[in-house]
Image 1 (cartoon, rainbow, N blue to C red):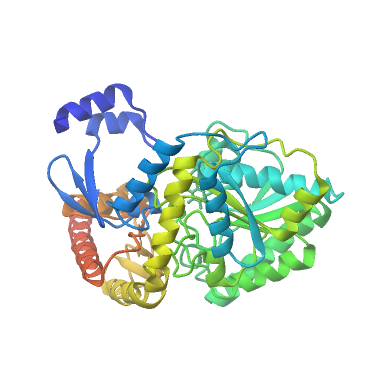
Image 2 (cartoon, helix red, strand yellow):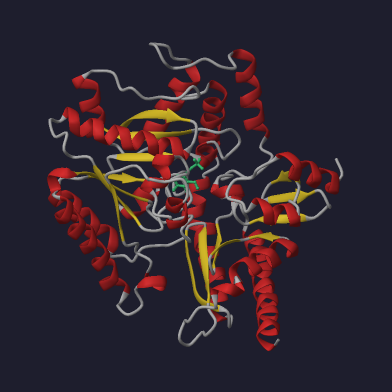
Length: 455
Ligand code: PMP
């Protein structure tokens, strides 16, 4: 299919996610046709370095025949059967076992879903059921964070703290509250990062006291906020949060949908930060995005209660533990393990990216360059000395993103924060290319913004 024909047919019938349909209709979609390694190819023959691993998910990179083969074999053997009504199948069993082997020692059960959003819907119902079984049915409130992201289903978006999502199609699920995010560059520069991290944890305690400890079920957060802008919390943040949760006996839900499966140089982001969450929603890198699958890893405290108390958990999805998705996920985990991909992120390419990425901090447009594992962010600023932002109407971040794409690099913008999360198999040489393309795009962005200011 030719590019223009594909765009026209796309425009005629396809409503894209998180998209201004009218604007896209005027512009036309970029048509991606194939991919290998860390590169995607578009229909006009451009090769583009995928600095976002799709949507933070293609951890093993594109074109892995072993995953194709795992899907093919399973589709032939048993393409579908459900896991409701006292049935199971070998791929779901094997994947559950493998996940619990890789997860922290106190997590020995998993509930499968089709996506990260469904995983967070599961979290909401599971924590409320846990407390009801504990004889504390009043513990229903869940505290999330402003600018957190937990998915796009109604429960997912309610747990998340994305104001534009709350404003559309509400009202949100009741008994969910939000506290401030640990975004030092954006909201905390009048304090040291350490003091700011502690202040954010104090906000959690204040919210718990406001709602009443006896009414609060859980706190949900991403170890590092992804969609909010690759926001790494100050070192003081997680220890202080953990202390508050322990003091008030509130469950911790670490949303590992992005941080899981090696992104931060450990199997789970929780391990990097020393969290001991009660629940971990997972998805994305679980199958390297080859087939859709998610789940919730459940710690013993919650699982033991759910199992021992009995009674049906009225929740589940047609595709919970889908055989082909489970087979691909299992093969993906085996490959990540056999190839030492996670260790490589921690000991080699993660530190290498940190060094190369930090060099971009000298650019006139960059107020901060930060990274952890294979996740990085650049804060675009109008004035490097004060860190003041560009006028929103300039949409500097989107401009830089579009320039990047045209120059052969996928780098995402969240407001004026540019973010990367490349496939974990990226080489040092490819990181050099990524940084070179990013710098060139920053230069071009600066020229265009200056031209705009002059007119
Ligand atoms: N949680 C987090 C932390 C995410 O980043 C995402 C997706 N970006 C989700 C949940 C939702 O996952 P999905 O899009 O698979 O529903």
